[in-house]
Image (tube, rainbow, N blue to C red):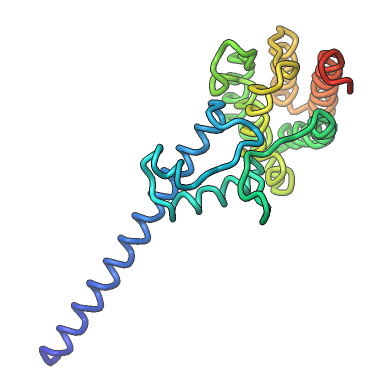
Length: 240
């Protein structure tokens, strides 16, 4: 039979464990909340590219503690939305037009492969969702809210459907959030054309018929066309 002091020890240990678990869960939720609040500030344009993240001001204005805020900033750094340097501190990332064009070249290569893999690996249910996203295409053109942009949903679904972890690590949700940020601050990246919706529909249809070769070619041509449009529109303002 267990003595009363052993039972008391067990009770105290269980209480300590429960309290520790609750504290970790609470801290995690606070970090998530801080992350969402700062991310919204970035994507809404309240924090513009190049601006410094001043922890005391953000903590006071957003009503969040400094510890969770600091961890949230580290997460944003991991998503390439924030850049940290010892001398300048944490700042919203700034990319040059040349950086953006280079990334579109990378997208052309990776997303075309992802489209081919989707034809091989996506389930019928995932393809149905992809076709729906293609129909709902509504790119950010400066007048609608960036979170309404169908393009992000379509491309991100396609990347995930490829089931290629390496591609998914590069073209993840953070990457498409970064693209939304660019479109907000670079007018020459904003475009709304029926051709993109048509491209998406054709790509989704090729995947639905399990034609990987066609899906790959259609995606490559889609991204290449977007890149060429962006270059043409940017020449007047950036001199690329």
